Image 1: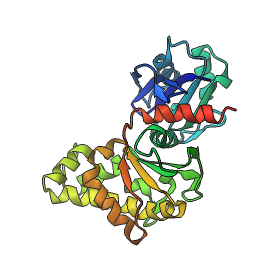
Image 2: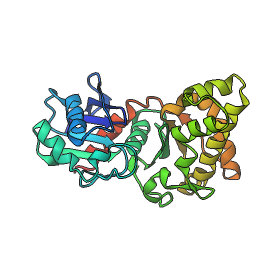
Image 3: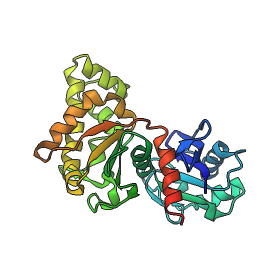
Image 4: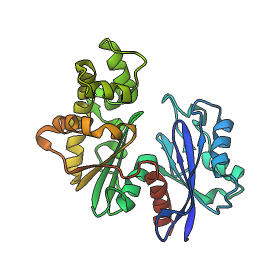
Length: 288
């Protein structure tokens, strides 16, 4: 296989492209379509298929967020606030029918795994062997890679950082977009401010904003330092919307890690392209 179609499905959009399996580069510009994660199942599948329409691809590799049965291609989005209409839906069959393909021509992998593989292959993780990818945004995503192979480190369960706890609470109750906004509002801050604005206010010297962000990043560092050290990571690659503020956030994350310390941390070279590249690589490397 010299190339295939790749899809990256997010909470607000789906991106389609073609990956050249000889160079691991996108061979044409990506096509992005808006996606409503709260729509009905048919509307979601129609939107995904519309991003891929007209490309004549014979196979597709799809980067999909948790919770999802990746082997069977079935959604498990119960009580997670996104894609709940796809809970129990055979997404593989639905996409195959819309794209005029047999279901076996569509494969799935976790979006954080795809991001990590893509950055290992052509991005900020290039040259390293054991790489941990962390995505900080709506929630906390994580991928664990050994020489390009996705592995389960054991802790966190299945390699999924959102299953970690800190101070008896799920990590995403403390470190996520919703948790940071909630904490900022509870401290007397602007209830409409998003994380980017809160980070900007912290840079400008607002102590309230800095305290909320420091608490979130300290918590993430405390929860993740042990698993990262036990995995023997050579490198961490950070992506997601919060990576844009990593010069501000990174020191707090390192402080939270404490005595366990961290390997070098690099900001992703291209958070948008990496999941597309990684999804293609995983599909090709596991197809034979």
